Length: 103
Image 1 (spheres, rainbow, N blue to C red):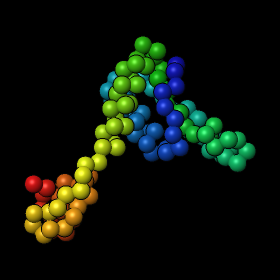
Image 2: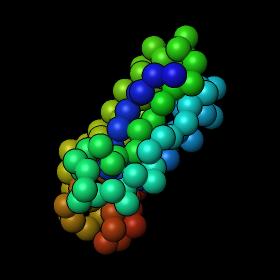
Image 3: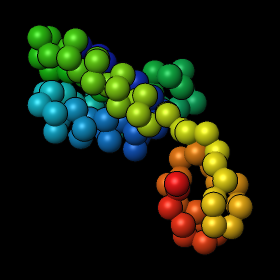
Image 4: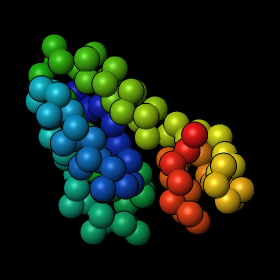
């Protein structure tokens, strides 16, 4: 087993585990109950960790993780709705004001 990723975000680490598992990577989360030690232990030591169970899958898991994290962070440029001229943040595909799709 080899540690792949750690974060303080429980939702993110569970989502990543589910995504990797769906892609055939045998992995598990460790340390998810260490948060009770916060204050007594260094905070980063209490973060949950994502581990790859089979060493031969580690490189593939690392590449998939990089792609998954990049997809989640790639927010496009703001755009102007052609219907109502409202400025919309880049991650949205439809105008929040009038509902028109991005053109």
